[in-house]
Image 1 (cartoon, rainbow, N blue to C red):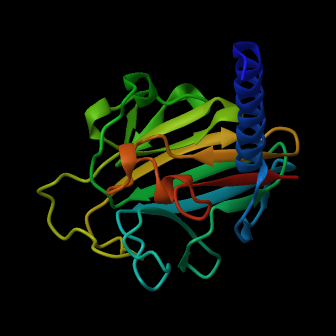
Image 2 (image 1 turned 180 degrees about the horizontal axis):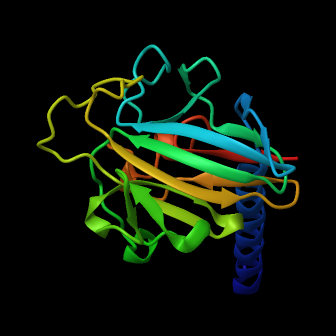
Length: 225
């Protein structure tokens, strides 16, 4: 086979591979793949307000997942139970007050820039009752990030020597945890992906496999309408 024909075949294969990868990535960014949860809405001065309570755990446990050792986000429903759903229905143009209870230890950020909160009111958060404009990148356990909103909040982890650490979720607030609070605002209706950027999937290549790329664990969507 002549060199020119071989080169053409190789180029065609590369283009085809690129197209397939493109379709795969596009599907990942739009596929819901998980049951959704509608956040209860209140009204303040005629505008929608929601209170979002979530927790992050080192191991989701056998009660909530067929993958009990996977790291995960959970959301608290109206009955106060913690459920494994990461697709949340929110109203458009709403104020969202977020409280995160983090029961996991530190993994550290690969990009220190992500240690400073962005896209939230005042570009600051409250950590264990104290205002903060950033954390030590080495102390990060997870992040809550909505790229379309230019929003990212790094969540500090529980100290390795902390007493009464949670083994399996759901985790009681009587156990060792960090409390992070912040406020952001939804805009126009849309389907917006949120995710964690800390490589916290132990046992997977570079820490980004398994739960890190599975809807219902460490990433999900904001369905804004």
